Each structure stands twice: as structure tokens, then as C-alpha cells.
Length: 189
Image (cartoon, rainbow, N blue to C red; front, side):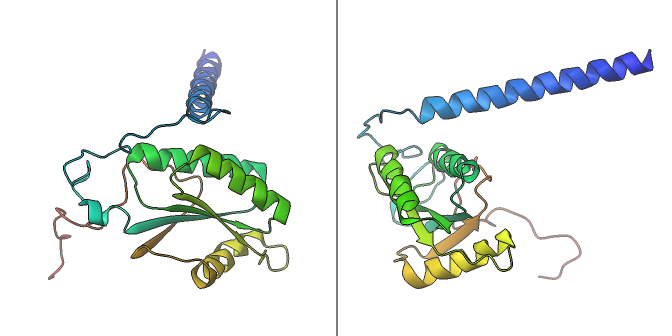
């Protein structure tokens, strides 16, 4: 009886996971159509009164430049697209840059063309960096790509936030991260 219950709960968990993945893929496909939609209205999170939904002023809206590092493979490409749409849905209004390390000129051109097609505002950007994988250690592309980006790309924002491409935002990053939090217990601050 225990064995059967375990199999049933395992099968249920697999079914729930499959439905969640299918729903996620469906939402991404609906938000990322092959033919772009044109929208000239306010961006997500705007209220039109000088403040956005987070309480930031319009002047602070682009103070944080969101950056994530990837390679040029297809797996991290869909993560990059997902991160872009998640940042839009969360209300992030600053620039978003994908640092792609080790891309050929042809790959970079294709990515830039796709980014231009899905974002008419120019906030979604690509920074092609050379591969800095040391001895086949692919994770060294992240610090190397970030250094290349900071040295060679024009950064107008006051802050740069480095995130992973698989980190999907549910709220925008704000300048007042600690506002309203209380002091940790046991401290004398």
C-alpha cells in the first residue's frame, strides 16, 4: 500500500510539474510572437502621475541598469527572452542588457535583430563580449563579460545590477531596497 501511494504521489508531482512547464511555455509564446505587436501606450507599471506603481519618480525609473551574462547557446537565449518579458511584467523601466560571451559576428547580428523586433524602445540591448572561459571553465565568462561591458559599453544608469538569466523578476528593483524594514535583532545600529 505504501509503495502504491508513493508511486501515485510521484506521478501527481510529475503531472503538476509538466502542467506548470506547459503553462510557462504557453505564456512565453503568447508574449513573444513571431510578428511583433506595436504598442505606443504607457509601459507596464506606469500610472501617468509622475510616479510608477513602485512609488519611484519618473526620474528614478531608469536609474538601475539590469545586466545578465550568457553564452550564445539556444538554452540561454530563451532564458534571456524570458528575463526581458519578466522585467517588463514586473515594471522595470530601466535598460536591460544581455552580455553574450563568445558569439560570432553572425550570431550577435541575429540576436540584435531579434531584440530590435521585440523591443521598439531600445531598452533591451546586447553586448557581445569575447569568450573569457579559462581552461574550458565556462563560468568565468560572467566576470570577464561584466568587466568587458563596464569598460566598453556606454552605461548611463547610476546603478548596474548583475543577475542570472534564469532569475525572473516579480517586482522591479528599486533604489530604496531597505525602506520600511526593521533593524535586525541583537544589533546596536
